[in-house]
Image 1 (cartoon, each protein chain N blue to C red):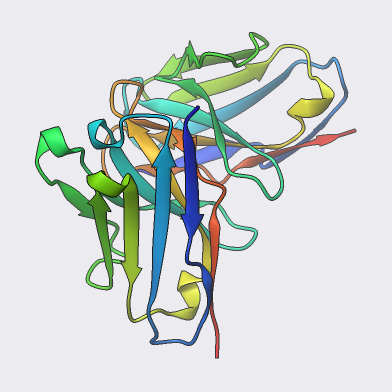
Image 2 (image 1 turned 30 degrees about the horizontal axis):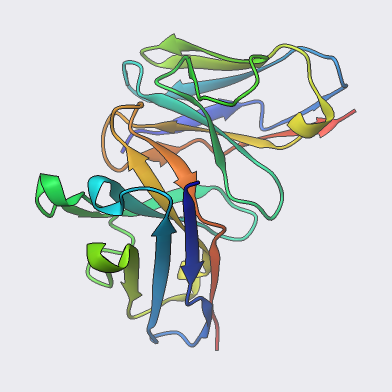
Length: 107
Length: 122
């Protein structure tokens, strides 16, 4: 199975900050990398697919990049509604696996 | 709009069975492959089962953790996805989400239900 490792596991930031979350795959996954946002008690929501494609309706402050084994999710200017847990997911091969999550908290 | 609504969760004893349903609306259900993904309490996400759309035949996948115990199925006439769970274990305790699978978008899951809590405990 492909292991997905996110860093950091948690992050404190302020409204207006620029933050970057990293996801590393245990082997090359091309651009089969997706990012999700999950708020407490809610289902995950797809933000970015295929490493860098912004899902329709997702604010442009979210940006994904990377290919191969190293990927990043950047939020350019944090808004109050962005404080949540973020997960990466590889779609390269089954079983599709998720990172352990990055909890973004208000400083 | 696309909506997925799970039902059937609850408390079950170890070794017992439970069946989950997922009612889909707002899209042509038969055109899409569907999945079940679970999340144990305060844990991450685990992809556990997949069923292809009608046009792709009947490809089914199970994670090793549930293979031989869980059965995924769908009824396109009822726009519904199912998960039959047998021989349940404490480690199956989780919120179970049905999610729509999009191969063309990075093999991602673009819509999710609200989740159904399954608790396996004596």
